[in-house]
Length: 260
Image (cartoon, rainbow, N blue to C red):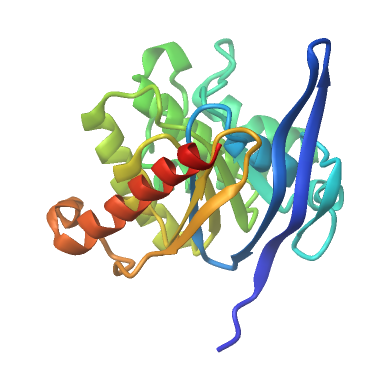
């Protein structure tokens, strides 16, 4: 069966002009993301992982090369509400309830109130926060706030979810739990997910494809198609197959540094 490409970057480069001279954030990046993929981007700080995600989201514009999202430019995809974006920090407004925060993009997009209510209820159930609609962000733990942030990104039912290191600030126990929840969410919604992380175990556990990036200028050092099954208990991390992939990711990160 032919897979459908939903994100396609060809020879993508991005150079920022600064007072200290040009900063080459991305250089000659080419990558296809297929429908239903879970793609993790991993690499050292400053390697362009987040920049690449922001180009997909039309938050940054490339200086060379091309990129399409659902066959159109990132700007057109943004206007078509093709993706939801989850930032590193939950970014919830403290004066709005959890339900109010999730409703905000729906209000901006003009959904009627009954549709807003149905969508808020559905996504809160998806992220296991049913019953927390009237709580305020400060009444929730950091992990729960991030789940609410994911719910907000899911509320308008975009097919693509872009996630910029959403669990990086959380402790390992909470992070493990949210990784499990995210896999269940991905399995139940069939969305395409692009996920930035600094964690090798997280990248290997979550992904169907792992993109290893080199230090600036950000290039792709390796693309690893995971042989792991889509249903993954946490203890899969103790298997030889998991450890082999983690070694390959580590080797790719090391090789990227050596090439710099």
